[in-house]
Image (cartoon, rainbow, N blue to C red; front, side, top):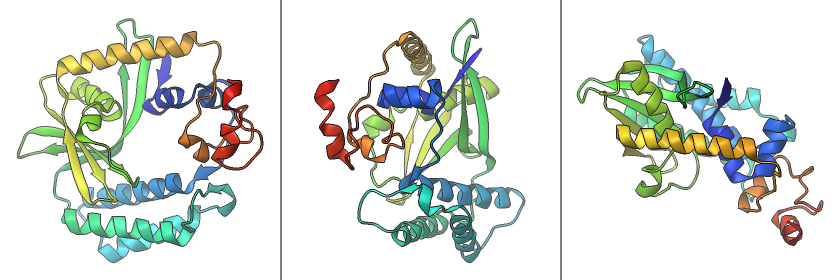
Length: 267
């Protein structure tokens, strides 16, 4: 049985060469973008917050910010963080503080009946059981008013996709398949994204027919990945944040995106 994840599938779509580095050659680069570090730290704070709430205690806003500051300080490694722009570490630290303050004020007293945080899910994607998808739900809720399960996901990026894009989102749709397998295909599942930079929530749903089509599309993508012989680099703005710049054949050792552009004709 082979196990995939939304991240693994997205990496191939983003850049086959990056996929090869990470999943075929298994080259591990510790460096990460400051945006990724911010997202991970904010996620860890919200996970802690709801874990406390599930135990019957609502941390104060001061406790939340203190937990965030300590988590940032304890895990921040200046040598392993990639910056791309004019913003400093302090700028990103303060951005996270604002995210958490806005979220706390909007959602307190956090009484939406959260069932689990960082819930691991697995689901079989094909009839033979050769392929499985594995992932983690930021937060799973059972809404007592609507009798719906809700899959909540936190986003710290500075951009928010359109409703049309979210209605085509694969990650949470995959998670909803797993929830329906656990609790019944007749259950309604609401997908909820928290765009923290905008302090707003966006919702979407999928029909069972759409989810079956998604499984077929995922299986097709997996077959494409497994039949690929030449993992060519795909040049995009995402190259600026890629941790494999120093070994990618699309780079000519010149810093920044312009270095990538110089080699684009060679592929």
